[in-house]
Length: 572
Image (tube, rainbow, N blue to C red; front, side):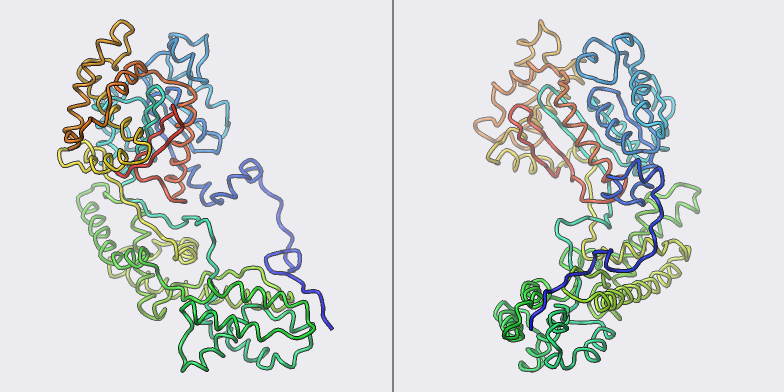
């Protein structure tokens, strides 16, 4: 007769395990975020030092969202004193601090949020700081700027670029929010895709798995119903594929029609009168995703193809800098990433036979506990064997490039191999390139202007024009009440200049209407707290991605139109 199918797998209660140690105080404090980026990600957070340039409402919001999850330390550089305007848009200043250092006030109140974060401040403008200490920013792991005019922004950007220090520039202007990221070459191992991949290798099963199936499931027809209902769907899939291949000259089912035929074979495995055949339902449902080889997709293949040359380039930079007594241009993380990528490429091209390393995990499936554990251990051992094979290539490549043999920690390599299917490298243009004569910004802005709602492209142009206005006039357009109307035609001339710079002056009519220019002057460069709050949240989110080197970061510009809630990402 039939029996009720019993599910097991990642449900730990069904698998004997050692008693878990009680969580540490840090694990209790940061429990929710550890579920997002893990303890290794938290270590990156706690080792990072952040420099915030200008403790404005937006800057304070961004830093608040980094202090709460436990950034290591921060320094605020700000020569301004607390003003009446600050009292209206910055929750981290107090009435009693009016006229005193804004950097000191914001630092003190932010430190109250997390006793484990160290804060300090420099009550000077960043231009003065860099004039007296040109290398001031070089000791930080991340720099965030807010409300900086173009001249000072480019000064900071050039200083960061000299040491490849991640930079996030944020600006709020009335109902406009602007964010620009510069991460140079930014490798990401843990992209956290929305849908986790099941690497079952049905078309190329590990040898140990094939032996287990041969020993235990060579005659499934003779199994009693209770055991038959608990044959893992993985086993059923491999048997069905083998049956299809035997009937098709050893070929593998890859097309839709062929997979449909495999489903029919699985359907033939159903026993009359046995209602508890959930394992067969699972096998049929998995056909589309399981019948594919774990080969690199086009993006990962391109990355692996470039890995060996990039490794040699970075190693050469390291040795040249060492000989000259200088800091290397690339970071240690970059070197480690490309060394692992080159080792992975050698493995795929060699003993991997075109396949990426086994992930080593197993999804839930209907099975008895002992069988599930055996299958899980087989995949875990295969993943470990693949990782050791990659490690051998990494060690050999390190020797060829005269690099330390222990440059890549084993835990890091294991994480790299596990996430090999989704590796990514994101390359950013610098701010100097964006504002340079050969800038390609115009093409990105043109695409934004062609969108259903072109307002984000318009706002980008207006912000650049307002930056140029301030650089020449010393104040933001419309910032002085008596000059709002007279600033409109002046800002219009700066808009025309920016359109020419971006090669958008041929557009008829102008993409930036007179109404937009008048509205921008009416905003007068004011900070509005709800826009500060939104942009502070976006800045902190992207900062965490940059610091932990997890998740896919914004590349590279984000524009938010607070008037209608429309946002756009531009790659400039």
